Amino acid sequence: MTATAAEDWKHWSDGRAASVSAPHGQLALTGTHWLAPEPAEVPGLPGLWWADPEGVRVRAAAADGITVDGADRADGPVDGEVLLRPDTDPAADTATQGELLLVPIEREGELALRVFDPAAPRRVGFAGISAYPYAPEWAVPAVYTPFEEEGQSVVVPNADGKDRPLAVTGRIEFTVAGEHRTLTVGRSGQRLTGVIADATSGVDTYRFRFITLPAPDADGRTVLDLNRAYLPPCAFADHFICPFPPPGNRLDFAVEAGEKQVLTR
Image (cartoon, rainbow, N blue to C red; front, side, top):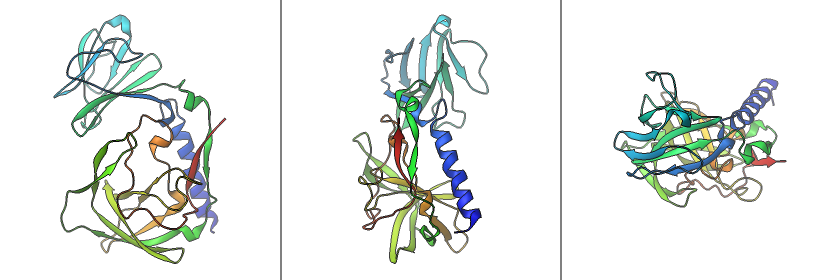
């Protein structure tokens, strides 16, 4: 184990804990409220909220203290009716109400409002993320082969009980712990991403984990570092929507590397 690799991993691990426990980090999510086309109340918030083809709309009075954050937004609280563009829009908006952060999202054409509260019990009680010690043997070369057809997806269960399509772009091949395996992955920008489970899942580690790989080179070569297998957002708050591993991404051996569980006080 080189000092540089171990130190880089420690820096990444510390950054993960800081990110999820930030005032409006993943641990602060207290609700994902799916919106109907008719104006209605959202629990714990003032005003009326609804979905329309353009995004999330809110009708509120200035005294309600809802302020929209966006590059082209005027200062001051909402006084009347305002459109909030969801996270899928390049010019996405967020809003605040007191200490709360309000984030409109779109998933498969449905709109919802997420509420992040710094006083959320999960955030207040957070005591860190348990993880296996760094071990260089879990960082291995991998080769990415894209699917011949672009735009493929596979339907998988999600943490909220619904089945949804998961975009996939190809497979990686690698050998780890003496086992030659393949995993189905997708792309996030130039990097590769995947959802995996293994023999530790649901026992020593959370039910499943996410992986991210560097952008492959022209020959498809990249690196799978399972020391950086990380917990999905739904491990930190029940209101996230996380896809389960696609078929073939459940490894039949123990991956004793990466993040394990959320620790609480």
